[in-house]
Image: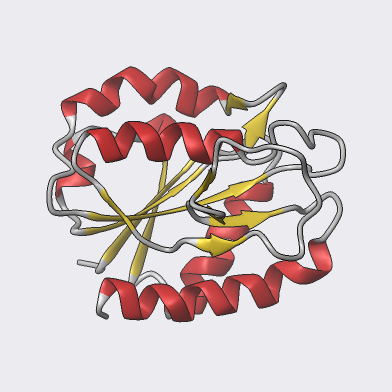
Length: 170
C-alpha cells in the first residue's frame, strides 16, 4: 500500500493534472494513491496517516462540485493523528477576493475533525486581495494558478513535495 492518499476533485482537469504531477514527484503510485473524491468511501481515508486534499475554487469562493457533494460526509471520518496537506487551483487575477478559498474551507473543516495541517506555503509571488486559505500570513497549502502562472507550477510542485517528504517523514 502507498504511503500517501491524495484525494482530489477536478472539473476541467487542471487539479487532476496537478495531482498526477505531485504523485510523479513523490515517486509514483507506490508512494501516492490518487482518489477522485466523486468515487470515494469514507473508509478510504482510514488507510492513510498522510493525506493530501486537492480542490479547485469555483464560482465566487466555492468548493468544486464533487467536494461540495462530499463535504458533509467528512464528518464521518476520524482525522485524529493524521497529517493533512492541501493544494488548490484557482485564478488570482479574475478572483482576487477569494483566491484559493476552497482550500481554506476544506482545511478549516478537516482541522476541526482532528487533522494536523502540514505543507504551508508562502504567499510571496502571488497577487490577490483576500483568501480563506491564508492563516498567519501563509497559505494552508500549495496554491497553483494555471490561468496566470502555469510556468511556475512544475517548480512549485517540486519544492512543495520536497517540503512534504520531510513533514510526512517519508
